[in-house]
Image (cartoon, rainbow over all chains, first blue to last red; front, side, top):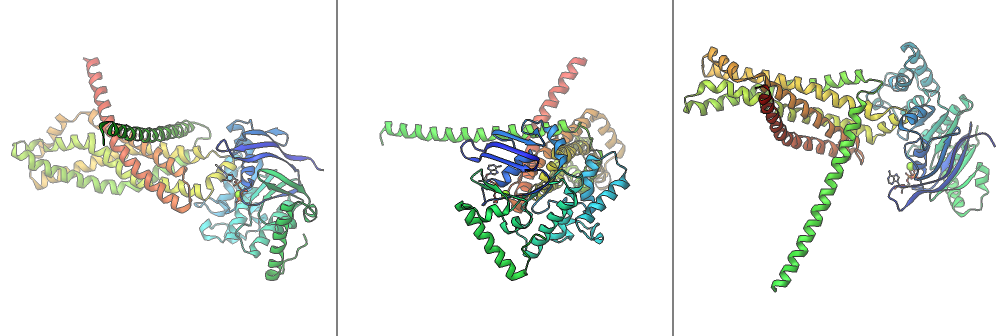
Length: 266
Length: 280
Ligand SMILES: Nc1ncnc2c1ncn2[C@@H]1O[C@H](COP(=O)(O)OP(=O)(O)OP(=O)(O)O)[C@@H](O)[C@H]1O
Ligand SMILES: [Mg+2]
């Protein structure tokens, strides 16, 4: 196996002192690969993400990112550390009073103060181009954009600071099949564009997971249920995994009927 | 029902009432503690690098611009109405010459800061709660945090500082415009003697009357901006949540302004008396 980017070990988290949302979670995310995290609703996927981002502190356990323990960092250290992450939110979470270009400029203005303005704009435009946004949309504010365009801008913003870890929280939930495929392709192409980037995708969508993932991690009840390649999942004997896979296959047939989407990764 | 039964029943009811009251009190104390923490963190962050000068200026412009027209309008009518009412009353005492100075006193000390506070809390405070609430429910605040930008420092601190700085200016505008209103009524409608009008004001009004009003305005700015940003920042529950945060932020701000005004007035009075004793 590759080098480990994120090492979550025996993390437990409770909000109210009784129910453990994360209950002995251990997960190692390899560097430079796409890892898709799946699981039924309410199994703690988002909570795990927030721990990896340092937005939540675990009740017990340790989380190492590139060998550095982040659970004991001070707020200031975390703020600095987070520049190594890029995150695409489910609804993009663009700043709604800024244009597409200004949104992508924002992290640069915050963290690359030493750069001259012209160079920042140049970087921002390159990122928007990489994310596949047509140049005529750069001056639009989010309310003038379609859902797909917002996703692209959100991705460009996440890429602005050359993050080492890219995180997608449910990037395709609630999108139609065409847009879902577009976003999946965007994730894969973004990943291939910058070698060495670690991508983490939280998804409900097993079909997408199989299309883009190097590794799939399935969570259940605050624990890791199974970690492996997509093939491992197809041949797994675990009842819950079988059920999840059955749903994914169902979804695959459905979308093939509608859209004739290719199943292969290319 | 025997006496004993009645007494037991009374005790039970009393206990329940006590428990209820205690629970409410605890919630209240918790909330006050929470909002104090929020405020002190945000205020400390004002002075932290990077200084948010650009945000500060844009919020000052926002708070000021949003409110200055409506402040002028309210001020001129408040001045006129007050002058007219006082004239009707004072005429019966043959003291109509006092109208100008009493209007000035009432406005500089009380009505100027309080009305300015209420108006600006409703307009700018409401806008702050709505803006932060929207940013919260659309995950823009989470996005800031993930990008390594402290949302309190970026969103909340400049709004608080801007409110504290702009409120005295707006209050000054209110004072000035309302005096013009009063002057129009006294001199042009009631045909009082203009020289006497100004002289009385000059004799009766001390600089401390004006300054205590401006100070209170700044204090109100501090309170409504903290309350409204706090409500907005902690919004839950989608678009409906934004509406209710805005509503509750504005209402709480207005009530607090009126309550704080009473205490601030008393404290200022004690302070001024004490200063006088020391200077004597
Ligand atoms: N801030 C919080 N305070 C209290 N409980 C929380 C908090 N955040 C999450 N939880 C609880 O943790 C559990 C797991 O939530 P989480 O959002 O991680 O689920 P999820 O796997 O992301 O589900 P979904 O697929 O629906 O997004 C839920 O029961 C939720 O109620
Ligand atoms: Mg979730």
